[in-house]
Length: 409
Image: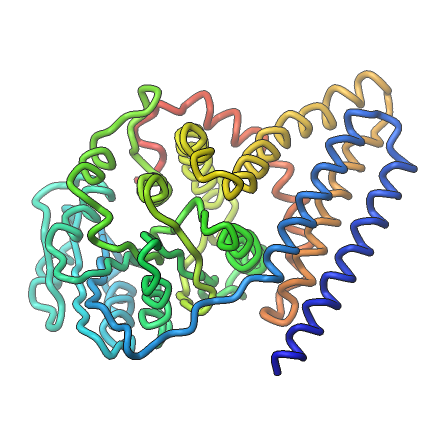
């Protein structure tokens, strides 16, 4: 079996290398602008490095002798009761041989779910009299948790039966402070928007976080499903998370990325592909754009913050800096390709070139996830559609960075 897996990886690496060389030769032959060529080659090489690292990723196998106590924290606010009951039920029913508790923190709901939570058996309920915000709800859950490991799930996240056992496994290494689970789209066939996101979610976790895991430097543990060693969240860390500011910016959304950064200062952060949970994603473009604005604001703040100390991790930080640099360059190149070059040359070639490039990259990711989802072909289409909205989202996010609401409610 090991020989088969090794052969499969070698074939994958061989195909990847052949593809990258072919794409670079094609770009050299058909790209007259040197700046565009340099950017395109950088993107291609980074894509290749990411896929190569992801191909070498392996999850940590669970050990039934390692079962630290676990507290599952679920922050909620004005949720649909029917959906919330299913979420809580999935947390209660998930199989785990060690000690486990479920803590539900109601962040000042006004739709009557507070009284229902008080009557619910098997959980510890904490009720805020008024809305205080997601991070304070999570913090209250941590303070009241008895477990050695804190597992966060969102109020619309359904756990797989063995998810807790799997997400706990990497903590057998004392250097690990936090673990990202693997999120899949719940009901992906619901709308066109959910179909587009299915493969995108899969590769964002299995490929990108799989690559980050090889560096033990995962830059964001999702609030929808992640785990933390409780002892790592010290009073000092908690205080900075709740009240700290960076460049005058408070953590008002993207609290998951902010907490991940604080843990990364002192510990490794890894990814566990076998720890699976299903989450509800935006079902239309309006909801998706609102989500992306929130995520982009968080990315800007937390990437700047992480950049101030990531280099202390040595060569393990190179992937992070390359990814962050490419992300920023992409906005500039997108503007350059869509507006500047067509104006200077009078040719529509460059926008087409850019969109074609995004679909080529999407095609590689689509091949990576084709055995995991029947909707894998949408993964090749999504990047071109996403490219049309990311620039205005970034500009708007940058201009409204200090907006405390961040579009969360």
